[in-house]
Length: 399
Image (cartoon, rainbow, N blue to C red):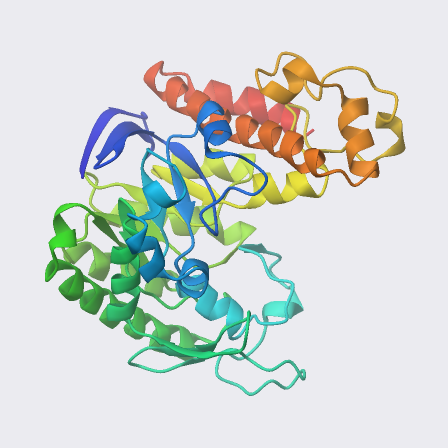
């Protein structure tokens, strides 16, 4: 893997670059569509490519359980298995450890309200709310029960690397422990020590295998909402010979910008940075301005399946009655296949009729919107008008 910075934003950490992988180059900053189970829901790989996507992300945990990483390896790796000839990223499964543990049974997302009670839960406690945890964390690794059939599994940093080697993605992530942003300081510090130890073990295993020559390994910065722990993590992870870095964990809105800036001021400038699980337009602008090169998020496709569609004037709910007789496109001037060929009324009809095509047409629009919004951010950096573009876009989008 090779990363080249083409231009830097004045008076900020933002930059435009090119990240070259074994399966092609990624012009950064870039948005990475999420194909959790080796598929971007409701879309063909060819459709995803036609939307402008340069790279996709698949989920290590889910593919390990189904169909199995060894089967994917027998098929020739993820690229052949899912018919995607561009770069692929896989996560480590660390966030699923959290979602199956402390957050299991909770309505949890990457961005939360600062006082949201659903995540103010002790990571190591028993299930006082009556919801049994599916994951148990120890210093060596994590034991968990499959959400599919209840079978027992044990994942260590070495096992996570082995799985990701079998999957064969171009960029893989070190095994880490994500925590609730409201976990107490003592536990955040304990979890961070575990993440750092696991990072080193992930590196040692990865560098002992031939895959080190074809797969780039990124380390993950954790630390919750604690400024000193985030600083400590960024400083430690940056000393290790990773090919790039991820910024992990969950955030309150007010802390995400501070955390991103703090971390990226410490991480090596010449290596790529990935803000994990973030994808709303205002957050993408924030990340780009503060030195993020890659973003991934399920929001565009998940929102699409629920009828929430992006426009330059904000999101709309296409199931609302007023759209039943609207014969205009979702957004005038949009270059996506949906807007060029179908009306709001037709897409609304598909949702009300519970037709499968509804998710496809909505996902095409939402992914096109987000992917190309980040491409426009990149172009605005190259043309020295990023801040003007940001101001104009958010003025309309957030009004």
